[in-house]
Image (cartoon, rainbow, N blue to C red; front, side, top):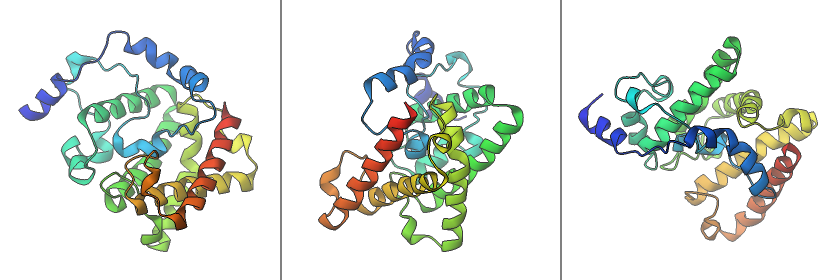
Length: 226
């Protein structure tokens, strides 16, 4: 690890109470965010976090091999592709991967990591500077593969975020529509150059109805998972 990277890590302040907050994070989100879209790792993967409240042992930072490196190669590598990536986000992603490794059975974790590798690779290859993918611009074979992977990995995202599994609260058809909605939502953000979903002023009139309908559907699924 180079000195510049060590310095970035050293400058990140992690409150002592962060570990307890991590346990309360999902419950607090459910209480405070009801009625809003909760966009988890599926939307913020490239920003580097499953959650915002995680404890990382500071003494190990300069020496540990990051699990996140197995997905992205290194922080420097993801920074070359995703301009909004931060070291703090990268550390949070690594911590959440450690949580996943602890929470999931060994076979589950290996399957999860295999699926996640496909998504992170597609983000680096096809994502814009914010990590969003315009799925209309990628080869059909690759598109179908990514859709299949998203279909399989979503239950892991739900489980790690303490939610009811979307595939269990939805019918088979609704679940397929849900995955398509998540992809459509990201695609519109990519096409409009949106950094986050709040930049609705960037959406042209011909896409606003599609964006609003997709958002409403994602919100309705989220309500079922609370």
